[in-house]
Image (cartoon, rainbow, N blue to C red; front, side, top):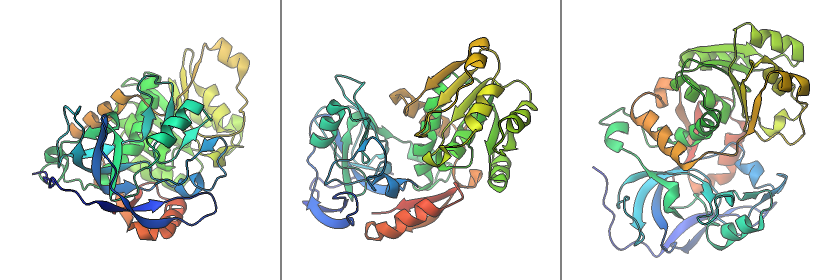
Length: 376
C-alpha cells in the first residue's frame, strides 16, 4: 500500500547545491519548492548517479550550459508529495519515476536535461531551464513538469510482485534512452541489431532492451570479460571483441549474417574509435543506423557504401514521452527483466553529504550492472 503524505509538508529541505565549475558542492537547507500549475512535487527516494555526473559539472563538456546555482541530478524515483490543480492522474503517495528530458510545452523543439543543463546553446531552452526548471533530483524533494513524472505499478514491481527494490527500478532511466533509439529506427522482433560499444552504462542497457524487444543482438566492445557477462544475462546475444581495425572488425561482425540495424551510444572517450565505420559497413541494404552517443569529433562515414546500400542514418537525442510509457509497460509485463535477473545490483548507496565520493565511485565503476545511487 502506498504511503499517504500529510497535508503539511516541511518548510525547508536538504539539497545538494552546485555553484559553478571548480567549486565544491554543498548540502544546504533551502526552501521547499512551490508547486505551480503543470508541476508535481515528489519526495525523492532514490537517485541514479550518472557515471558522467562529475564530468557534466566540470565545465569541460562542449556546448553544455548548466545554470548556477542549481540542484544537479537527472534521474530519480520517488513518491508524489503534492500535485497542482491541473493534475488528473497522479495521487499523493504514488510511486513514480522522474525522467529528465524536458521540452517546451508550446514548442517541443525547445529541449534540455533537467538537473544537467542545455546542450547546444538554444536561448529559449536556456531561459526555460534557468527561469523554471533549474533544480534537479539531488534533494529530499524535487519539482518537475507533470509530463516528466510517470506512475509505476508497485504491486507488480515491488515485494508482492517481481520483488524489485526501488533502487533496482532506477535502471529504467538508462534503458529508456536506448528504447527511444530503437523506436526511432523501428527495430522489430526477429531482426539483428549491432549495439556498439556495448559495455557502458547506457550501451549495456541497450543490449538488455533490444533482447527484450525480441531482436538478436550483436554486442561489440573491447572488453571481452564484460561482453561475456552481458551475453550470459540476456537472450539472443552474440559478442564481438573489437580490435580497432576497420576490416578485421567488419569481418567479425559480418560472420553472424544479415544485420538489419546498428545503434551507437558512444561516450566521449570513443572520439578516435573506428567502430562506427565498421558497424555501418556491416549493415545490410536498406539498413538503419541510430547515432545516440556523445562523440565530439566528426566521423568518417563510408559515403558511397551508404548511397549504394540506401542506408538510413538517424541522429537521436533521447526519446519521446510515449517511449517512457512503453518501456515501463515492458518492465511491468515482465518482458524486460531488471534487478538480479539481469545481474544488476546496488553496489553503493550514498547520502547527499557523500557526493564527492559518490561521483568518484560512479565514474570509476567498471561493471555497468553495478548501480550507484543516492538515498537522500
